[in-house]
Length: 454
View 1 (cartoon, rainbow, N blue to C red):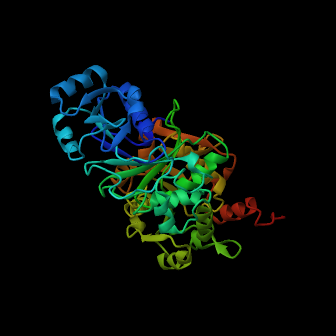
View 2 (spheres, rainbow, N blue to C red; view 1 turned 180 degrees about the horizontal axis):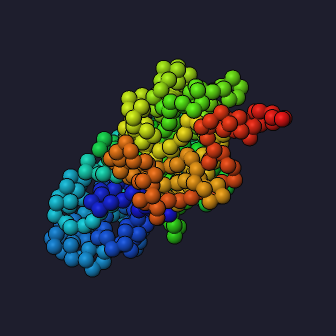
View 3 (cartoon, rainbow, N blue to C red; view 1 turned 90 degrees about the vertical axis):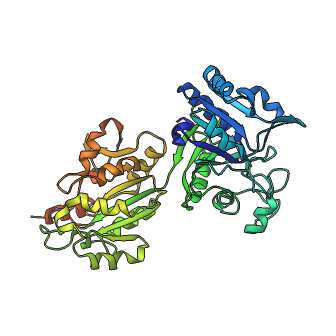
């Protein structure tokens, strides 16, 4: 995956890179990607860049050049870096206040800014007056180099370790651990310090391999960092690779549809007993929690009080669909979507009457989404669509605009070219409990019911 895809870059973005372990390399890699797509890319630094990196920079101009000259250079070279002065083997950028003038005077498609320093260290905590992030930034990318893992937490290997030690009580000289990295990344006074409230935040764990133990550690760091609602995602990869991003972990919600009247069952389907003294709805929530879904919403309708009482111990959000009698499934999905926080990037639609839901299937859907195969991800069993269905945020407005007689599949089918099918080897994705016979068969398939002998 390319950086511009992982970062969701759009024309007009002002992107600031902070942290340690690959800011300049990431800025340059992103800039060249965008130039290849025909964009006009302007770059600068609000701090400085080492002079030895001069040969790797694109076409260089002084920031006081006439705007028309800068525009002409963009037309000729595609990628232009603006600087103020070269002094003491460092290339300094213009004052941060100049960014607003750049945006007003120069017709670039995007502005990329190196907004922090770490003196070559792969991991950092900011000192006073760091980082220097322009208030106009629409995207901020905190970076960590994974080479910091297992290195001593000292000044030779980490930038300003004292701030981490003072804040969290880490041991000086101890090996840097994965949870330590995520704690620093998501901390408002350290990794997130100085980021404008209006900016979206996508982290980048640089030097992550395609496979192996280090990638697993990177996934853990990303997962823990995403506990902060400031993060819209955390990308894993290597800035110097041809395809720099191996995956991007984004916060994903699950909307459990539990509003049905269950008229054919004679009683609520979601409240039927399943296993270990738990009902179907409790079992489904347990599977979602085991899969570490970031945010879970249960939508109630009929039997709302009973469902709400049962799910209370699971620390999930419950929303009541007042239109459940006439609105069909789409009204429940709308009710769930409206409650989701702004940082959630996708939601899995989970049927409340599908008790054989398996964490393995959920992992496969989440991994496919993280690896960028698509932002509508559907499990497929023997060429048949199943549930849960993962739907990216960009399609939610279309779902919210549906009328009650329309179905979510109308939106999904309208974007058939965007669907990624994940082949699974369990029929649980196509089975539900709609009749007493279905209930008996599902319990039998799950090994909970002895086979009937006639």
